[in-house]
Image (cartoon, rainbow, N blue to C red; front, side):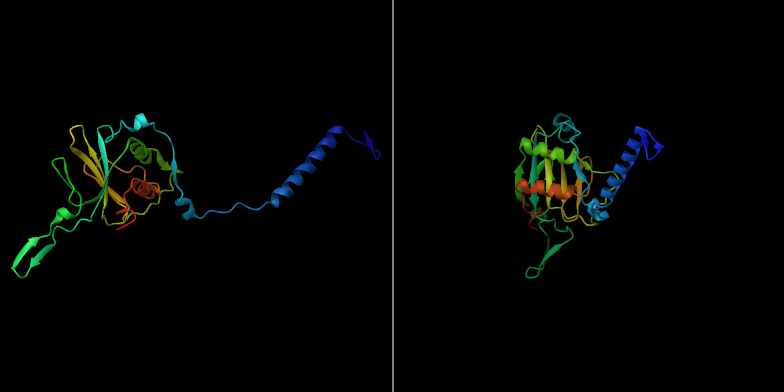
Length: 217
């Protein structure tokens, strides 16, 4: 092909046209608005994700669910310090505080209801939701875990596990105020501590009908 006295090929025109299109696309991209930047705190506060890694069959094979016939979710008055005493000056006597009116009390596999405010027996669906929360709720991205935990431990809620003989074999106390949990055997945890784990767990308790320790103190 001859243009203005110069010999050129169709391939040259196609190549030149392609370059022009690429330049146009670059100009368009250049003027597109930049995506909003997330702060480190925004990323940290969104690091829990549902993974669906473990099936319900597999989840129920893990302790304590493998052994539990019944599970209770409860709330109770904050434990008084055992060292506190009551002084009756009129009788000149010193009596220990009745600690059974606060805290969680289990002896020989028997739960004492004296201090309990709310008691809910978990349905099969609620057990399924709980195991999902413990085993299938994980980090969105490893390394972003920055959940803060208080040095205190003032539990007002617990999950209590019963065996086939109707006895309590284990339990886990949860403090939503300090974001901590402790179990009798040290074998039970709330799972991976992605940043919203205790928020999700609190919602679980509220949905189960427990307000004390979650909404009210």
